[in-house]
Amino acid sequence: MAVHILGIRHHGPGSARNVRTFLDTLKPDIILVEGPPEADGLLKWVGHEGLKPPVALLCYQPETPQMAVFYPFAEFSPEWQAILYAQTNHIPVRFMDLPMGIQFAQQKARQEEAAAAPDSSTDESLQNGALTEGESPFLNSNPTAWLARVAGFDDEEKWWEQMFENRSDDKPVFDAVEEAMSALRQEFPRDTTREAQREAFMRQTIRAAQKEMYTEIAVICGAWHAPALKNMPPKKDDDAILKGLPKIKTEATWIPWTYRRLGFASGYGAGVSSPGWYDHLWLWPKDDGIRWMSKVAALFRENKMDISVAHVMEAVRLAQSLAAMRQMPKVGLEELNEAALSVLCYGETIKLSLINDELIVSNRIGEVPTDIPKPPLQTDIEKLQKRLRLPAAADFKDYTLDLRKETDLERSVLLHRLQLLGIPWGIPLDTSGKGTFKEQWRLQWEPNFSIEVIEKGSYGNTVAEAAA
Image (tube, rainbow, N blue to C red; front, top):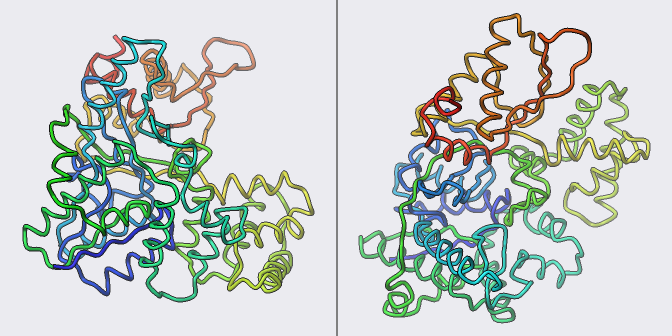
């Protein structure tokens, strides 16, 4: 029985491509992925035409919906590609992280302890890299930042892009990743109870697959965990770590996500700084800059800026020249940005910020099939959004409602009811002119509204019932 540990970087198109190449070659008979086991039943939806990333698994405690955690996936996420491979090739795929029911129970115990002793400092977060007792500030950052520093880079993203995203060959890199993480773990030991429990449960999941007589087991995990899963301690040691852990009821569902929420700026601990650019790299790995600059030109034209074909050609040439001077195998985002700033933006950084917001980060939002099990209140909201032609979009859009019209009046009622429920999808704005029949609203959907919807579902199964 062979166990293949694939240590990856979350949301890295280079890692995703390496994973797909490895799986196509290996042809495993089971795949284990770092993620919440409570969501195993939802994996069958991956590959469904209605489930379009970016999406996220939402795990929550039904009695306290604010106790929740998101597991985001983009099309270029290695985990997504591994799950998609399993579904396409009809082989089993399972999540193997410490169940969220256990992690929620631990979080609840810490909160109760903090309430009993308000002067003590207790970690109440399971996300966003919050520190727990015994951890150092290093653990709140990505370990690859240290590798970038050793390689002489002050920017981790630039180092990662050069080492993985711009690779011109498909040579396996997982052994090198495991070796690097082993060195980092020795230099910066992470001796925390939660980390030990997570890795013990992962190892137990691997042992369970071996016991079921699977012969080629592919394990997709964060690079940091790879050494701990490759060097397995005795089973009794892991049994002792996991013995007697409390567990509470947990439910899970798929929700739409956005690229903006996938970025570092959102506070997401495993985020990336350029999800829109990574999406481009995933779709067009051999682009020499022409497609990207064409997208920049199209964006500028949409914003009433004159950009000619000659501008695009000159910007691409400049980016390619910069890459050659820096001995890069191909143009990267830094070269493209510098060329765009010089040729297309005429040195105006404000235009470069438009490229960053709309293309490099992007605000793409995913889609979830209507027949995926959802709370009744969420289903009612989606029906009203469709009937009233108010799509849930990641970018804001302004609406002027004429309350003398039936559809606009119904829109107003819906937005006011959601305001009453504490779901600020629509923000009322001041209107100009005379008359009380007009309202101005700005609509922008945020993924975290899903938690509010679950929580307010206790008031009723429809928006009208819950608001009443």
